[in-house]
Length: 177
Image (cartoon, rainbow, N blue to C red; front, side, top):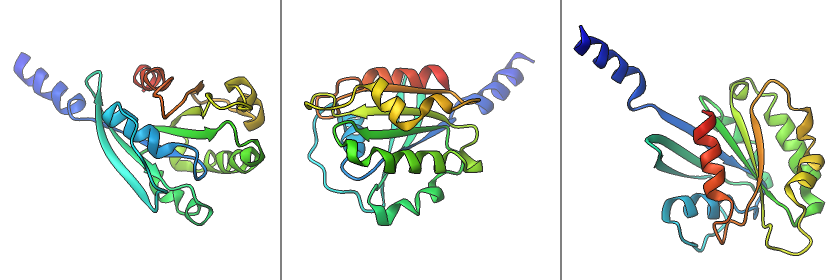
């Protein structure tokens, strides 16, 4: 009987892959964050046309991470990636305050999609190392994150090129899925 229960438990839990999508406007640092997780190093990136996908294991959890291009022409296709998404990482260029209203609109439109109703939201206020960058609390206010109800969300500051704040972000994901 114990063997049957062990196999049943294994079939339910072992091998579960959590889907994470990484979205944000172009030049926010999405790809830099993805490859920092993969290599723990700074990697030179080019604008993403379409998407990048990588698998990562962290604390015995398997993640499939989709980095989706953020150019205006690609944003309409974001919804094709939403199915079975466990976590949405929203990357914000904290130094590009003129485009925050665009990302606010994109974010709130995304969160109305039924496929994301159960997804957790992690906002990464990137480029904290640049002068004039908004801190995470200021980004949160600009994005109206305080109105998000009935869903888990978090905002963290980070610097993708240096890897600062990224381990804490991954830890939050692991603790909340």
